[in-house]
Image (cartoon, rainbow, N blue to C red; front, side, top):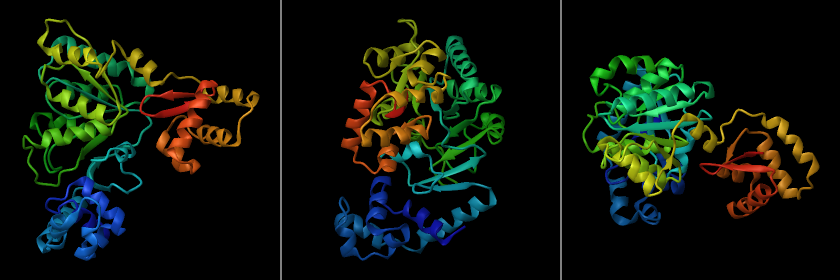
Length: 367
């Protein structure tokens, strides 16, 4: 492991400095190591830092670096992949979330940047109806090579993981503790299978216990790492509704399966559908249609471009989309080197012309 990893982990351990400020410090100082070597006067000038937070950085002592070195030993011993937010294999969808973790720790064998990823959440005490809905949803998604993300909790979470394994789909559990254990322990056997067909992900260092306050923090990863969050049964104040709210705040798609009006386990789903916080779905077909995952030949439709006269900048964007089956607007801006306002205007024009199609999550593809 590189010396740089020590500084990356140490950055996540600075008292009073959360993920947002830590990333801001790196942006202004140039690297994690530079943050610790910067003068206090310079740190104070970083937006949002000021004297108090600058003190937190300056006063970091050897114990922080010692803890970082201990974590590196744990990582090396247990075949864990550390993911710094600037690493190329860091979950790309999370980079669009302001409060995404500076550091993630992953154990497994799957790509965290697969083309289609959904999070499935729900009550810890599902009915038979909820279990059947969850299992059928995943079974019907089997041919679409979708990565299934959940939290390994009782109920809908573990149902989703097991159904994914049975249908040979990669599945990732996001944990609210360190990777030295599995909680709840009764799910250890399923978790072990996931190492061969998915993996374990967390932003908590080893020996961190699954304390109550860790779960809402964990939920931001569940919401941010996926294209969409699907709620399968939830009580009126279930933890899955927190995940749905976070997904909405990230401008991600949220779906929910409806239930009977007098069913306690469906109160949460019915409520977020009624409040327009989630779109109602009844099957995988609904999800596939809304997400634009129909298995059609994009290349065949590209021929349409030959008969449309495009402006040079429009043609540039079409060429970008020809290279990808679908692509996020942020990546379009990055590749085309055009500002967001310009790209948005051009994409809208191309959509009106029927050349491209907008998809959920600010994604686009050729029509």
